[in-house]
Image (cartoon, rainbow, N blue to C red; front, side, top):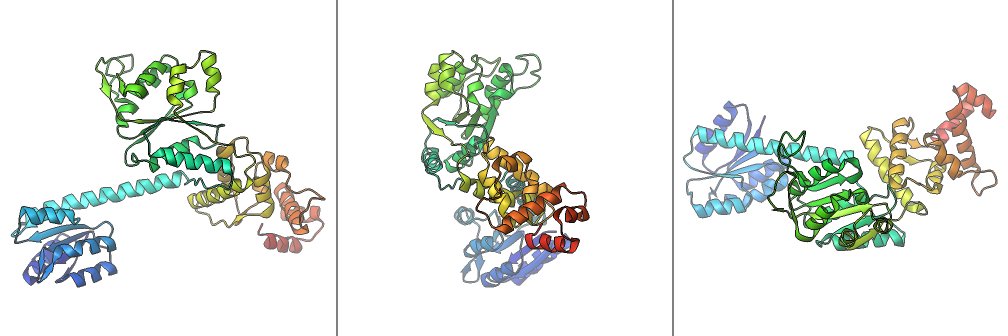
Length: 443
């Protein structure tokens, strides 16, 4: 059901529009001036507003912005007996969605309402999908206390606004894809598409088709035209992940596109142009690949205009803690759980582990821990054995409090016991004491 606001100083117009709207099942509120209109909008949300251009001595356009501030999805229709091109243009500039001259017919109203309701519904569905995407992919911040990572972020932000090709280098899992997407969002191309192609995931022919497109019938299985990512990404950015695995046969075609912005689809001799910014990434030694003849030297130099090295997560315990906290919040919300954080021993384990899989491994560990959690904090028993055993954060004689050692021991016994009674017997305490300890450590 639509909520409709009518703002007109003529009582007959208010009555006519109210009867029309209510007869179609809409909820209607009718007022005669801008002050009452804003007051109503602050009390409830409206989907549509019909505003007279002249409200006595007031200009109806002056209230449009206030209504939009109060009701983010509202669509404003200006109605007037003094229609002109100038007033119509001014109404659109002020944010009105449509403009109807008086007198208007029921069919005109019906058409406008249906169209604007459809537009509003589509906008809200898009916003919902965007929110779903944000929930699927946690927001990664690049704040860091470590100079190497600070330099990465500073350089990435600096070159994001340029048109230069960027080559991201670093071990697998360090967040090259996330940084590439962030650079796109920081650039003037942010409102345009961001495409991703994983070079090792496709055969040579399929990779060329995915990149540059093909025409119907150009090869077996080409049952329809494919414009390719370069064409569909017009005005945006294209991220080529693991560029070191790009087949030699495609490398000269990519080089030509980087130099001249020109390409042809498979099976088509027409030369096309596209405005797409290329960001590439690799964890390979491209210089070695050039020496061995597996990667073109001229393509390497063309890709290597701006080079950014992402450091591994090892040796950055403060960054591990910050990332773990944000990932914990994300996965807790995704799984509808209320989690307060980590136990001291679990946090020590996370900070001490070397993280050979970098951010990707940390993400997977936190997702698993949240799914398996039954208490309000993540303890060491929810971490994979290799993290706890290799990190070995709590050992007898280490400078930790007795509480940390006791908590860690109780958690490990509980994790390996079949029942509370068995755990209490192994610990040498009664079940009531174990219950109090669990409450103390929030296990």
